[in-house]
Image (cartoon, rainbow, N blue to C red; front, top):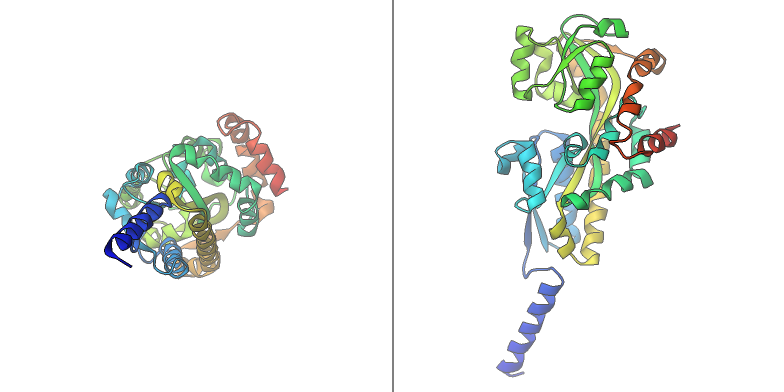
Length: 331
């Protein structure tokens, strides 16, 4: 074969690769997450990296950036960088995603899910996919659901067993209006503040308590400034493995199928880690001096009744019958 024919064939191969959205040699993708290397988020992304690199025969390489390093440690900036394509992929909480897609906040409704199995069943079904289908209009594609955990509550005043026990408590919550409204309905005094300022506020008594998944309570060392922990699973906190929409659309159909398959497998692994680790986390927090109260479902009826107005108040924002369809699905 002469040099002219070889050159022509190489040119054709280059065009085919370009049109299929593939590049010659390995393509490195940057994946960002706000948590560190010791988190289940990181372990889930590490499993995704392993699966992608194996199943694409190294055609795609994944580089993980913990602590949102590429975004200066600011999670909202991280999200915006994925939307713009500066960062390729990220793990994002549905709480943060609700700031750009309000219907995502349906997942945070109080006492929507009873346990992890129920949440997994719903989110892996048609309702979960319906929410993911809303993200492309925000320049994101959601590949699969992971989880941060159910959100629990701690405080320095007393064991929390009934709504009377929370009345007047100064509780730090995320900067989401629905969480403010939930705790106002319970009779508490909620406010939001930067999480980095929270340990000092708790130590100084500026705040009586806060709410977060067990992994955050433990990793942030809040057991040093909080005496009482109540396990009440009041709000489910899923995360979504996201990819930039334009990058996604550059992939071939086969590549997309591989990415979805790997993402679902990796996020199932991450969800299992979180669920299985909760007992160990509870034991560790108790060993570090926390008094732990676990509320059975029947003890939560009064809490549920008090926060019922949230479902009505946010129904329009969440898209009409979306809240009712979720509630029907868990019955």
